[in-house]
Image (cartoon, rainbow, N blue to C red; front, side, top):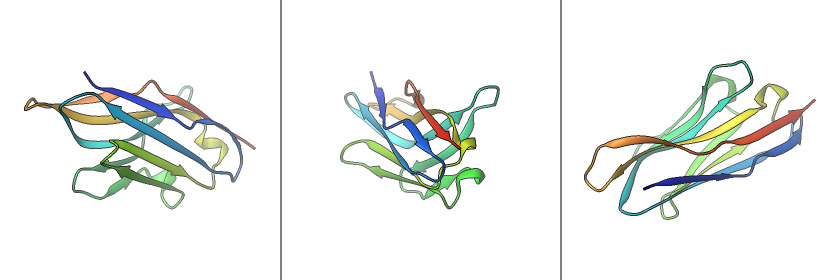
Length: 120
């Protein structure tokens, strides 16, 4: 069993910064990719940023140049540094990880979500 635990959301003013963290815990698992999606009220789920094992990061167009994703493999933790935040960044941010347990296939796991609200 694998769990993703997120932290770091909250309320911030326009132009401010926040840092999200997501830690994967469990036993005998391997991570193929970790990243963040977001969902605003009435809108579809949107890719924010993702980083793959052995690959580079990928960002959604709306956050390029403002957000930075990084991973600490020793801690199985992914971070999202969000700078120059705008009201349109307001959403529930969901951590996603593609994880394999033992020699089994990879499956997608999701965190519980953390609210980010940017005031104008």
